[in-house]
Image 1 (cartoon, one colour):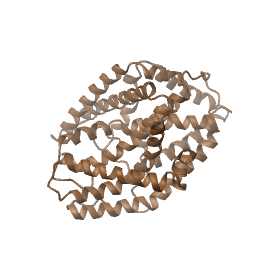
Image 2: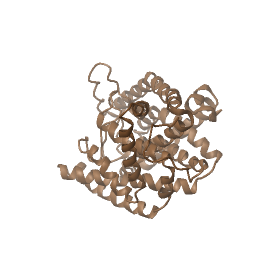
Image 3: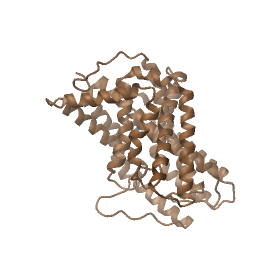
Image 4: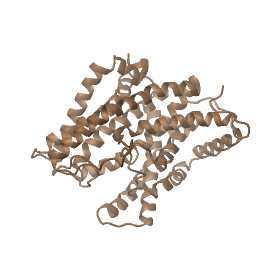
Length: 392
């Protein structure tokens, strides 16, 4: 049974062996682990995002590195999530994909909402009292709880449900042609050598109504995901799905890395200029939002293809340490946030440079997360739920 019903373009044999995909899986894990640094650095930026701790010790270094990581990390993650979702669907069928993801994504999200989110909110409120920060706004009412850092799990569940729905619709007479036409158009797009310049203008419109330059929405603040955010990250997920179905396109991803790097620098520079005008000088207007959003998306897509290309060429084949890191990254991201915020509040009273404090927060957090993963998670039922049989 094909994953999707009739398609205009027949599947081509993959020119890249599955061993090359270990590098992409490691890249997915690294993208998740970057969240520990990202959240650890937020307290030491000159910019003041919504956060529990804003330290008096600050450095422009953290503004730049947070912007650089935040500009591509989750976009890259959703491309890789779509890629590996299609891999599972090819092996087990769409039903097998949905069952597996219900266990590995749905169950951790449900348990996390009952345990991790209350713990995170309690630590957040305590940190606000310690540092004198304003408490976050209360939910608007009803079942509107924040998902904080677990928002991406909820988005993934929506996308997997969309895969199941799309597969079912393709079996309805008259609708299979529509799915095939959509597949044909996107396949032509990802085969084009100009995709790094075309794709940004497919996703940039989602940013036009966002809360700030280069932002699609304030993810994690509400249990109910926004349609704009679902459309934005869903496009990245869909392109990852098609990259696996059209694995011959990965040969093109491995090439033109210098081109991707140059575009990434240009896009990031344009975004930084627009962000500086917006945040520090109070400049507003649709032109600034459009230019800044275009720069951000050029940066995001260029970095996505750049890092995927490097992973495919330099990290092919199985490596035990890479497998371990990829498995551990899921636990690191799920459990890190209350620990990071608590350590930021502890270090808030210290008279030390921002780099020293950030190194303490990120270093101690990573050590505690590694010890807890290695001894309490990896070979337990929790590790089996998160990573399957590979962790046992």
